[in-house]
Amino acid sequence: MKGGEADAVRLLSLAEKEIATEILPGLSADARYRMRLVLNALKIAGAELRDGGDLKAATLAQLQTVETTPQGDGAETLGAMKLRLQALLRQGELDGNQALHRALVIIAEERGRLIR
Image (cartoon, rainbow, N blue to C red):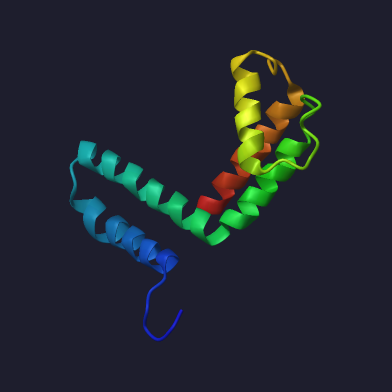
């Protein structure tokens, strides 16, 4: 970042603070609920910008622990692996797969940790 230029993470953080301190308190219950959804989306976007590389690496590492098919040789990109796993899930090939369940729980916990 040069001089006074703001980066994306900083801008999202400022938007989060403004919503939480200035906007939320004045909203009705329904509008407050919807604004909290927006606020959570901003937090997730900020976390992914800030720590997205770490999250991608952790996700890939976890998904590589899942024994699925011979194509899963560990050389796949995260995107390719997700597409292959989605296809296997749709076909019912991974029903009851405990390793996949454990990997997805760990991934979800890591994503949750990033937005706190």
